[in-house]
Length: 269
Image (cartoon, rainbow, N blue to C red; front, side, top):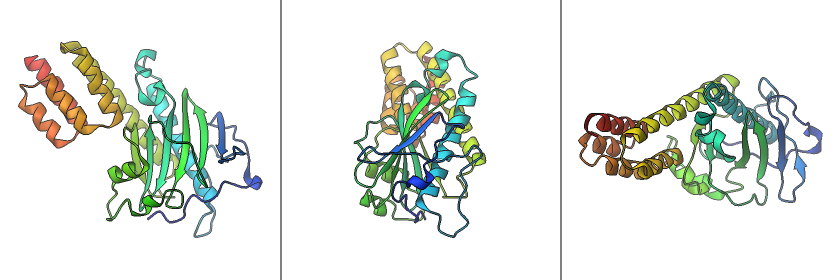
C-alpha cells in the first residue's frame, strides 16, 4: 500500500539541475517558485531509512517515468516519421499523473487538467521529442484517493474517475521502490511502444479495407483515449454482420476488437 505520500516540494538543499537523460526538469509550486528534481542517470537513489523522504520518492518516480519514455522512444524512433507522428506519446504534449491510492498509479493522459493547487507538486520534462508534465497526487492533495480502492486488487478505473481522467495513453500500477527501477521501466516502455505501434498498423489495414474512413478515425481515437465501450460500439458499426466483432466488443479487450474487426473486413468486407 502506498503510504509515504509525495509531501511538500523539495527544499533548496536538493535543488540540483539535471543534465543527464532529461533536457529540462523543474517543479512548480502554486506560487510559481521553481524547484528542481534531482534525477540520476541510472536511477534515483533511495535513502537507507525504512521510510524514505517524500522528495526521494518523487525523484525516483520522475526517473522511472523518464526511463519508461526513453524505452518507448528507442523503439518508436526506428520507424518512419509518419508512423512516429501517429503515436500518442510523440504526437503532442501530455500529462503524467502519479496518484497514490492503496496502490501507486502512473497515468499518462492527453486530457487537460486544472492547474495545480495547494501542496500539489508538478514538474515539466522534455526528452526524445516528447514533452510532459508530471503531477503528484495523494490523499492529502485529493482526499478521495484515500477511498478510491476499497479492495486489495488495484482498481485503475476508480482511480481515473477520482482524478477526473477520461482518456489515457497508458496506466501503470507499480510498487514504490521495487518496481521503480530502470529495468522495470524499460520493459514497460518497450511494451507500450510495441502495443501502440501494433495498433497503428492495425488501423492502417482497417482503413484500407473500410468504406467509412471517418468512422475508422473515430475508432482509432477511442482506442488511444482508452474508451473501451465506445471503441467496441464503433467496431460493431464498421462490421455489423460480424458475430466475432460483437463477441470481442463484449469482452472489453480493445486489442481483440481490432483483430476481430480486421479479420472480418479481410474475410467479408
